[in-house]
Image 1 (tube, rainbow, N blue to C red):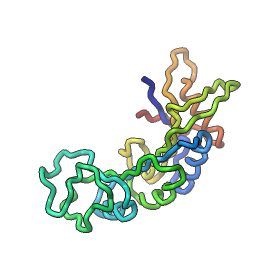
Image 2 (tube, rainbow, N blue to C red):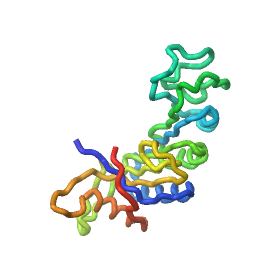
Image 3 (cartoon, helix red, strand yellow):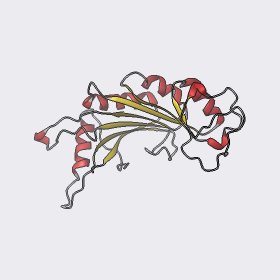
Image 4 (cartoon, one colour):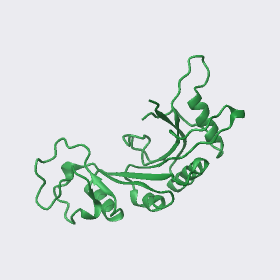
Length: 211
C-alpha cells in the first residue's frame, strides 16, 4: 500500500495569495471529477457560533469524546454524532466540553466553496484539500504521471496538516507519492514535488509533511 507525502511550496500571511497559489497548483492536475473538501475547527464558543452561522450546511462533530458529558446538557444535541451546523441551537451553553468541534464540507465541486470558506474560517485552524487530481507526465524530466496521490492542501492559520501548530501564516502543500532512495540521490517524491512546484514558478520551501 502506498502513501502520500506533502511538500510546502508557499507560506504567507496573506490568505488570498495562499488561495491563489493553491489554485495555480490545482490547475496543473485538475480533472472533471476533481473535488475539494474543507474543514475548520472551533476551539471557543465564539468560533463555534461564527462557524455555525457562516457554514450552515457543514457537518459538525466532536471527534474527541474524552471528558464530554454522558448525557448532553438540556437543549444541546449529542455533539459526538454528526449533525448539520444549522441544527445547532442558538444557545450553546454547555458546549465547552465538546470543543474543539470540526466543521466540514466534503467532496464539493472545485470552485464552489473556496472563496466563502476562506472568509468563514476567520482565525480558526482550517484546511482546504483538493483531491482526485492527476499530475502530468514528463518523461524527459524523469517525471511520471500520478493520480493516486495527486492532491493540494491549503492550511489556514496553521503550519501543519494536522492543524496542531498554530501560526499567523497559511501554508500551501503539494502531495505526491512517497518514495525512498538508498543510493544518495534525491528521493523521487522530492524530485516530483520540485518539478510540480516549478510548473507555477514555485519551489519547495521546507521539509515534507506525512499523513
